[in-house]
Length: 128
Image 1 (cartoon, rainbow, N blue to C red):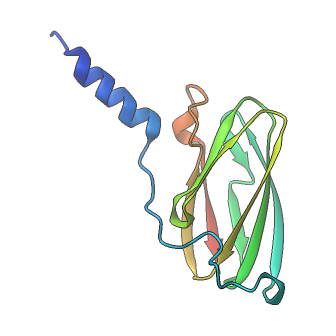
Image 2: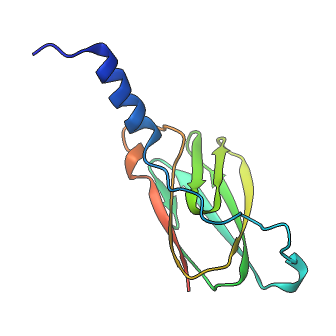
């Protein structure tokens, strides 16, 4: 069976970019009064091929500050529901803030192709 190179490239592009979650919230709404809401800081590690921790629990109404360090290679952090997509360079820490206004489960994933286990590099934020 002969495969068309255009179809192979299109499929590869879809697999590499993954299916993103559409934005539902602004990461930090402009009218949010940061000084008046509870805050929670969470440290994450991005490594081959996982986030640690891969489940984050926060209370609704909290300003969440993620401190993400990539310890093995370059990765990405996409929290689509909040419109967040950041590159994580190796041995650097990125600070990402978002306001967890509504209860629910929101998936995150690596958004920078990092190797064979890339598609399994996922996690979730649980807003209680």
